[in-house]
Length: 468
Image: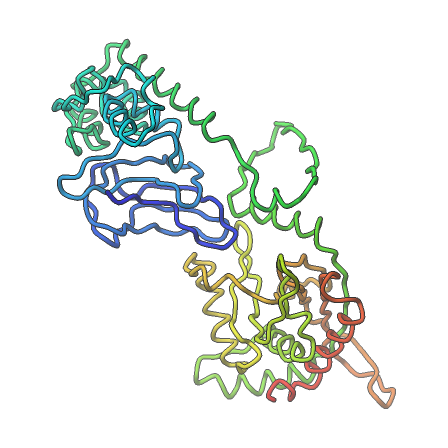
């Protein structure tokens, strides 16, 4: 029986959040159907079924954080039964283990595990060594019921007695649609005792899940050898305050940026660029490209200039690895795109070999799909240097945090009109823009950063070099 698992959507991804089920337990699904919405540290996306069949069991609940590779559901083909799950599962391993022993399926689990030399479940709820055929309402020979923790909770919340509900799932399992049908008929109300017993069983399952799956530190936290985060204050709950739970993206960004500032020795180098010539060229090119629907941005010029200048500075087009500094010949330019709940850095591959028009097309497409949550993992992984632009917000200067394992990031500020002196000592208007490099001092030194930024400045002030 195929498992639906939490996919790995990025190199650093360790777990994802199941935001919403788009299908209910017991629904028929076809290969390619969207069955759930999941959130990773980078994107929110729909999870598609890889097989056709019946969505026989939902293992994870909405809001659960599930490790990569952990099962969140089962899709059953014709004639297949839902397997009993042991102590390790996607989101609620302890709950599922308890449910297996409690629902009359524990006998089957015991027999299977004894065959493989494991007797862990033999001390369960009296399941015994013999499995009995389930009855029509999902009850095993011991009068307990085949239903997932999600179905049990739904029944308990609506004060329904599972013994009064006929199961339509595989092997008579009670699925979500059966409970919803009973809610509409209003003919399966619990007498109090059954609901209380089921509530206690489900509560024990939740407790066991907590014990079986303690919260583990992320890879980033584990690498922060000895780093102790600052103690956070308790909410004041003062009048007029609102408590907002950080999203997974916000949490992961916070962890990665904290790790970067703690463990990457940053140094900074700022240059001020006269953008008069670049702006004049941009105006000319945009007039010529208007018919193609292309409009070059200032950021396109900066990314191209940064890539051109890197030809002579490979140590800044590098990543810091476990075995040393890996120098890259191609510039895979990551660009920071702000989202409502964080940011993401889609990558323009081999930016140094592409013209301004191609960079413009790709950057706009990537930014649009980033905001819509439509990027593929390979489109936001593997950058070798990043450009972060806050000029559109009127920011005249800022420094950015390096995006590990990259060696550098360039902060782009706004263009400011102000008087300057020309070569004849005359006062003339100029369009000035500050660029600030943040670089990893383990990979490059201050001199490297200064020479590189001087070259970026030279290219932008003589934009014909962008065409070479």
